[in-house]
Amino acid sequence: MVAETKLYDSLSIKPDVSQDDIKKAYRKAALKHHPDKNKDNPNASEKFKEVSQAYEILSDPERRKVYDQYGLEYLLHGAPQEPPPGSGGPGGMPQGGMPGFNMGGMPGGGRSFHFSTNGGSGGFNFSNPESIFADFFKQPGSGMGDDEDIFASFSGGGKGRGGGNPFGGSRGSRFRDSRGGDGREMRAPTPEVTTVERPLPVTLEELFKGTHKKMKIKRKTFDEATGKRKVEDKILDMDIRPGYKAGTKIKFKGVGDQEEGGTQDLHFIVAEKEHPIFKRENDDLRAVVELDLKEALTGWKRTIATIDGKQLPVSGGGPTQPGYEERFPSLGMPKSKKPTERGDMIVQIKVKFPSSLTLAQKTHLKEVL
Image (cartoon, rainbow, N blue to C red; front, side):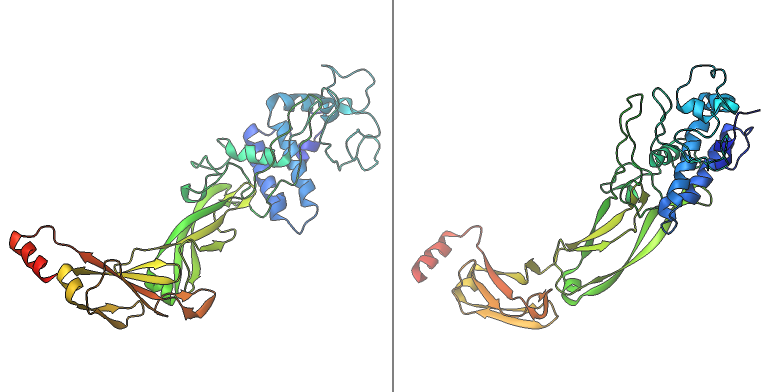
């Protein structure tokens, strides 16, 4: 026979259940009433707090034993080992209700109740409900299967931090701990949702024309039906606009791993693939034409394919100096903010000198130069 059943009732269990049954009941109730899952229900936060605090007491065998024998008031207010004579109702509860609880005004306590965060001096102090929730899902045997790290970063990388809210939506804790009567330190606040960055390799031609890409990612989510982590595939659609530059970020909100504080954001960062002909310089494109010494001195001709596939003839009558540049307007990359305008194409000359000359060649060059 127990002194009271209020904590058991809040978890919808009987007083004679096992510790494993208490864990299962809390997991089910916490997932059901978590505020991030019930944003339109103003009562969800209080219910979530109620089941979390009930679990915090009943999950500890020693605290549960004291609660079963003497009741919650006795546990919260740090009473001596035995309840004092004439202390009132069952479990040492005073008639007419308990400080820190809303008993509905019923003599001796009613069916409804509301937890107070702090007990009396020297008594038990409740933890932050979000912290109870996070700590529960970090421990082995919490129903998370073989994946003990419920709070792992997205796809194993990024700037993830530890945590434990598998729903998302909230970027900070709805509850705050206060320093208890026993002088315990305040718990750390829930960390903000993290952002994971991934490179997105794109060809220069794709950045010139613009393109649409589909990216398949794997993300860790929380299956509330089974209470376990699962990995699911997700397809992201993204448009690469003409003129995008390396470093441009394509942002997706709330598509990564579920973690404490919310669901990770994912940023794809445009990275230009190396091009066989062109090197991009802002909105301009640079192509290097290599000449031998004879061509540089006497003249040369080349045909260069532009980025949009046209054939552009270039030439020089000689002599052509090493490093000489010729600019062709509006044959470069489109400007992302002014897509009807383009940068220039620059043709730069590189002269390849012979590694050695015979004595006769040197003599002849001296005669003609």
